[in-house]
Amino acid sequence: MKCPYCGNLDNKVVDSRLNKEATTTRRRRKCEGCERRFTTYERLELTMPMLIKKDDRRESWDRDKIVIGLRKACEKRPVSMARIEEFVDSLEREIQDMGEREIPVKLVGARVMDGLRNLDDVAYVRFASVYRQFKDLNEFMEELKDLLGAEEDEAAK
Image 1 (cartoon, rainbow, N blue to C red):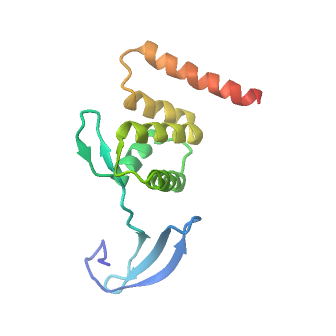
Image 2: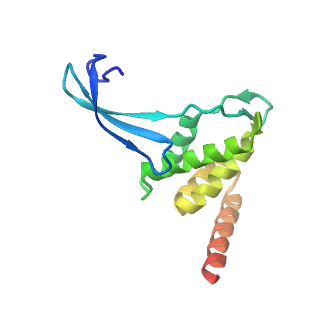
């Protein structure tokens, strides 16, 4: 592993930990050259389906794209990166379990929106406003009403 600070290839692993699902290994490393520490993540490389875009183009699965979108939606909200990573891990498992070679990007967007609704309401509305491309304030207000109605239904149970 190349040191991100000095580029040296000699380093040693100081600590290793698995995540809760034992799907990712976090390793703390120490560079033998500059003696600085850095973190690496080791994850099993999965074969993910191709995504079918709205215009019928095909695009490869890109985990980072989803993480970046979630981070933007959750910016300045009480949602940790660990929770975002856990959510994306579970999303990837769910999609892989479908066993499909191609899936519509709409399906992924819907799953992300469902997950965000459980993570943080404000992040959900932020993501929905970009994902659904609301054309006016009325569409935005309808989404908020749906969200508030769902919360009232949950509270009544």
